[in-house]
Image (cartoon, rainbow, N blue to C red; front, side, top):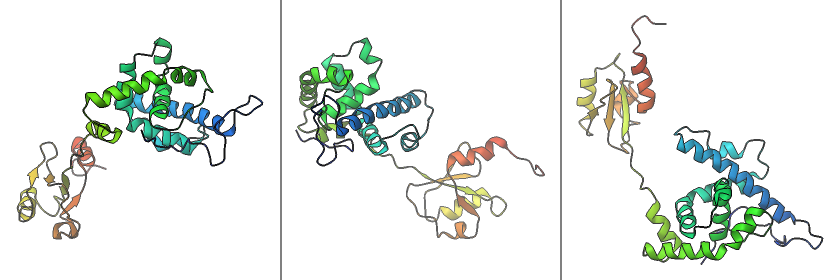
Length: 244
């Protein structure tokens, strides 16, 4: 099975083995800390998703001062998230995690990614030693997952878990100081299918991807491009004439 290298891969010429005096090589030390930094970032991201409350972008979390190995950490977090659905199913099928390791599940996800898809990991930490001890069970679980889904490659398996992109409609807001909503609907309706939004009275919905930048109503300021979330602020405040 082809293995995809991550940014945590040892630099060219660096040994992946522990040095003869028993100390970690630079490559091992870098990978060891990158995995744990990645696990901390991954924990924040997953907790934010579970609470439906963003804690910041992955890049902003990785580029905080506390993260030292930013490039490797960013790559590990992104790649682990990309493969997370598969990783969870593999670990569930392998049935190797006890309560101790379930409390460190983010680190387990990172290490499982490296075992299955990333670089070879050395026995430099308790988590690494535990998962490498069960490497055969993890790889067998992945093989069973491929068979169960009737696919032959990791790429085909990942395609089954990808959410198709849903095109977003184009929103425009009517400048009611220059034009009323019904007139805007009639004018835009000459070129596009136009709907009125149910929540924001002066917001119109047009098909995804339609280009309005050179449209006369945009040019003369009768309508302007604005997302629904931004438009709802004004609708919620419902300002009255003369408000300051």
